[in-house]
Image 1 (spheres, helix red, strand yellow):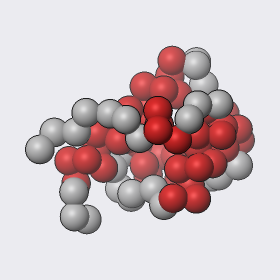
Image 2: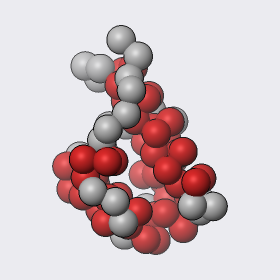
Image 3: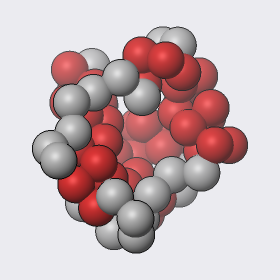
Length: 75
């Protein structure tokens, strides 16, 4: 992973977005049409999302892609 701090910050951001809606990981997975395991792995910084997964997440959360990827990452 080239930017592990950014991947971790994205995972925390995704968790905050999900929890703000009162959703479980499964609920987000269902809304975004991806697996719960993928949500878990992103939130725990085990994997970086691909562009197609980011698009699915934004659509599932009903936010823009820009809002999804706008977060503060530690350097």
